[in-house]
Structure formats: structure tokens, C-alpha cells
Image (tube, rainbow, N blue to C red):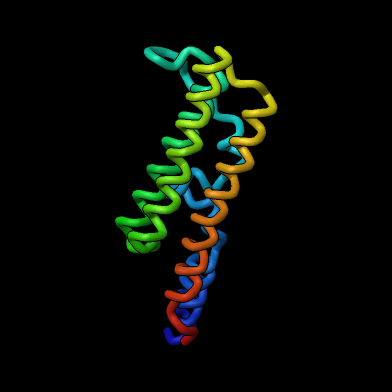
Amino acid sequence: MNYFIMVLVMLTSVQAAADVTHDKTYPSCDVQAQRSVKGETGGSVTDPLEAYIFLRVNILQADISTARKARRLTEVQADVLWRRAGEVRSDAAQFVKQQGFLSAAERASYDRELDKLAGKLCNRIKNISETTQLPPA
């Protein structure tokens, strides 16, 4: 019986230590999947690449909100990430307004910025998860 409990505790610890980047709770942590999302045009969004950036920002901001509610981010950390993601959205919208479209080079630049923000979010989540593990039995 003690052996069974010890194995159960070890499995729980391994699961808790699993890489959060594949956690479905935070989709922005899966950068490959994020880079393959397809934004939908409509309303004021007419450019497909702008729609893509807007969708990525929406997903990232939703994850920031989720992490804040779960107390994995402080209010200040969440505000900084949220604001920067919003700046990416407004910068992309400004480019489309000026040029009529978002170029592939601009998309790549915004992708790098969003990847960096997602990395900061996911590293923070991962670090919190690692520090809140139960000690081994």
C-alpha cells in the first residue's frame, strides 16, 4: 500500500513538472500552433495578415488574463504584457491604414514580438508551477 501511494505521489509530481508549454490552458505557449492560426477578415479588418496578428494578440491577451486570474502573474506583470500585446495590435492596424496591407516582413516582425511576449508569459507560468510542486515523499 505504501508503495502504491509513493508511486502515485511520484506520478503526480512528474505531471506537475511537465512542460507547461503544451498545456491547453495557455494556447499561446504553443508557438508552432500559434503561427499556423488563420485570422478571419471582416468588419474593419480587411487584410488577412492583420487578421492573423489580431487573432494572435487576442489569444495572448486571453492567456495573460487567465494567468492573472490564476495568480501566476502579478498585476504589474500582466499589465505590461497586456499593454505590449495591445501595442502590437495597434501598430499592425496603423500599418494597414497607411499602406492598405500588412507585408510579410512586418508580419514576421510582429510574430517575433508576440513569440517573445508568449515566451515571457510561459516562462513565468512554468517557473511558478515548478516552485509550487509538492516535495517528494
